[in-house]
Amino acid sequence: MAISPLHLVQAGEVEVLHFWTSPGEAKSIDEIKRLIAVRGHTWKDFAVLGGAGGNAMAALKQRVAAGNPPAAATVKGPALQEWAVQNVLADLDVMAKFDHWDKTIPKVIQEHVKYKGRYVAVPVNIHRVNWLWANSQVLKKSGVNTVPASYDELIAAAEKIKAAGFVPIAHGGQPWQEFTLFESVAIGVSGLDFYKRAFIKLEPAALSGAEMKKALEAFRRLKAYTDDKSKGRDWDVATGMVISGKAAFQFMGDWAKGEFLVAGKVPGKDFECVPAPGTAGAFTYLVDTFTMFQLKGWESQKAQGYLAFVLMGAEFQESFNLRKGAIPVRAGVKLDKFDSCAKASSEDFRAIEATGGAIPTAAVDMALPTAIKAHIQTVISDFWNNDNQSASDTVLRLMQPLSVKSK
Image 1 (cartoon, rainbow, N blue to C red):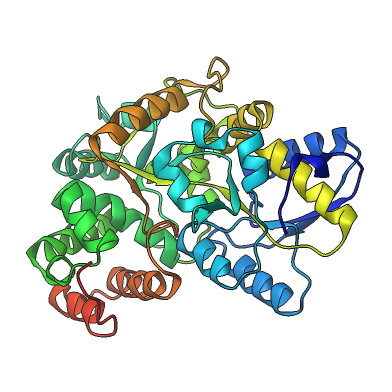
Image 2 (spheres, rainbow, N blue to C red):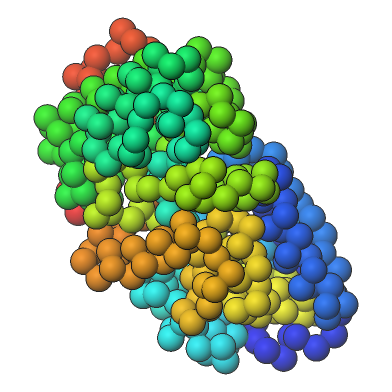
């Protein structure tokens, strides 16, 4: 079923599955609801708790298997392609040509939302994952004058912060958060080329070599600077530790910024945003994507078409991302209302994309097939949580079940 501008006429219901349930994310969803209501369409919320989206994807599989999919779901990366293979996604090409998506979406992003050359999903932003967030007052009270730009500087700052009685690194002890932290550490310690070979190309030599062991050992060293209550903590709770002044740093994508803004905090004054140490030349991106499913009812199809039109609109991309913490994916959206972190992110993306340093995040579902990502995430999380597991044992675990081949 093809979605076209002709579907924008009459009202219908649009049901969207998502897992954006933190305070900052909920405000972002409100922007979609507001714009959908302008044309009289009815929004039906299908929110599933769980910051990494695992619960949401399980619920989506049940709905599609039952022949009753939602109009759209926040599916991204290789998982989107996996759904496309099943021939259950709507064709958005007519809408895309009408709204000139090929001219307004960066080429590196287009690859993620097309299947066999046709659009099957709507990208709404570009998140940078390799951010380090810092509480300005905690740094000042700890005698840390600058936000660390290298791993060695981070360790030195963490020692001062710990001595001052604060938690150096706010960590949410969940597997996806541990992989997210490891991803930034791996790039910062072993380099961007290593990351591409290990987590994009899945080269055995990179997955099992000295650079991987070096990254793992650096990663483990950071555990001493987290608190002993981190296990099972949600990401936004960890962000709250930085916001409230209990902790100094958090490694997290820029959706965390939405929590700072909801709390009334100002970048450059109350908190700092910089690339994770050693990663200034990299931009690990996550694209929030609304994947459209084939619907049977004409009214539902019309509402779905309008949803796609709204999501790619400049008005939505501005208002949504002002709250979500990301930058618009659509070219030409003015950033006048955006904060300094977002403007820096936009400038960095343009510059880094030109040098080949804009790369999909493996930790947050943009780079790897679902099963392989799940395996690597489990191994990385187990290493973090089991001090008796060596780096040498870990690289063997990465390799043996995967049977990966160089691409």
